[in-house]
Image 1: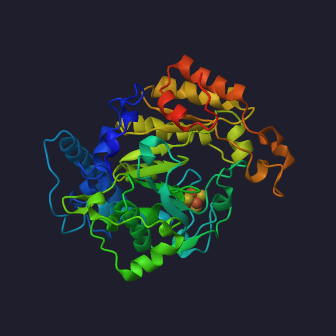
Image 2: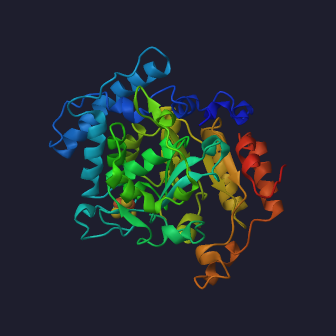
Length: 418
Ligand code: SF4
């Protein structure tokens, strides 16, 4: 695996000097955040009340942030050993399971006890998490795919219901893929990293609805040494396991233990408590910002509270000083209602954040006239965005001073420029 930082895209004006933490972890020059969280002691019994656990997380988050800042600045080093007793990472894991029992992972805040899998919420999931597939993804932005690919794990199911979903086969079929234990999931992440992937890319459907399994898997990664049984459980879902990627521990080690940047690739329809946990574990974020503040989110994805939830979470990332890039998919006939307000919001609230203005929309799921699932009420989405619409989206980006060119131009399929 070559260093991610050596790729020339980092010299583009849009990206210069940005995402230094993510690159350092990707190149194993710094420990991932989850490993720092494993060095902070949790001074509470993990059997305590949920309120007490949250109070401890709130108390220890500034301690974590201070240690992270000092490690970033070269003033501190990661202690060689994890906390022997409960750590902040263990606390995150415990809290994710407590949340599962009255599920408030996402803004639907269903309150159902998914741990018993008896009553289901909007996502229709119980306690199980299913992975559809995982592989070295060479279709992500260059800053994520690098030369060796982004280690992408695709979960089944979603909490949103986008009529045009570009991954409809896995997001609309909750039984797609195979059920994974947290250890099998950790093994998948381990394999991808030890084969050279630059990051572990948690995506779906949406990863938020699998928060408990993901946090549990992350909590196991540092000490994981997969055996034959682990590999037998993990390999069948790996789409590229016939390609013969070589495992080399050098690809994913820092201070002799597993290391990789964690990438949260999500619709960002999450709750504040989910954000608080992820803040301690994710090294870089990839929010999908789809709809404007009008009726498009409820009409096209049956999702209420979309604008306030997603902008609220983006504003939090900005306030926290996290590293991220935003994706916005240009939809046909939705420039004025969606593209323009989305880009305006970014320009007004987080103007330094790079944006990928994506041109690859194609009619899919319920918007594809060639599909038996086609619903005529989505006729305005039953075509690709025109060249003029894509150009207009780029024009908006340029007029608003958005950093979009480096990410959008290297990725766009039409080859269009302004
Ligand atoms: S993940 Fe979201 S949609 Fe699913 S049960 Fe929890 S709150 Fe409801």
